[in-house]
Image 1 (cartoon, rainbow, N blue to C red):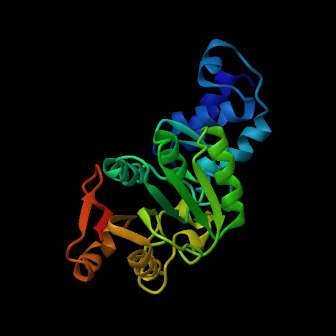
Image 2: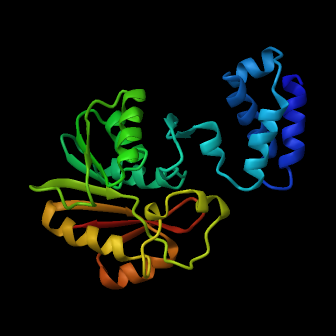
Length: 263
């Protein structure tokens, strides 16, 4: 089938399963053909219908589109993603925006649980005058994050394999993290079941990882240093009860999304 027929076929099959079937159809066809959107509409291509149906059926099972196409756009930059590493979400852009507001220059920053590297790499690429240390316990995540730093020419980010903040000594200006914050049994969207559980689950109440990070941050942050955490609205009230001096920033949909604490 030609590329126009492929787009129609994919859109038809996806329309009852995803929010933007035509956009996803475009991305699938571009992935199969190895082309960009401009080429998709300026030329005509032959598409392997069997291969197309294979990924359509995976998507209908709510397998993440990002894993299918192998990349995601974040902060207007391309990041590669792969199964076994947590997928970046648009909400995390709010977290980075808040961190960028407090950077004056020459800060030392730790990104805890870097995953694909989106936080560390984005900050490092936008602010070459700072030094960013990115840590993750998952070796696959570290390998992927390194690739993303190369793709985005972020030369001032350094990668460490380890558990949360345990390897660090000394004093730092900013600690930032999108940690696991979902409690077991909490409702999740279907795509998340294909991602590594240890990247989002924090038993028993969604606060375990955050409490560990805050405890270590008290030791590692300089006086007047900042801690930024992406959070769920489900835990924002509990966090404010524990840390009444903290600030909670809402995302564009009005949900509590960023926990900000100055030490």
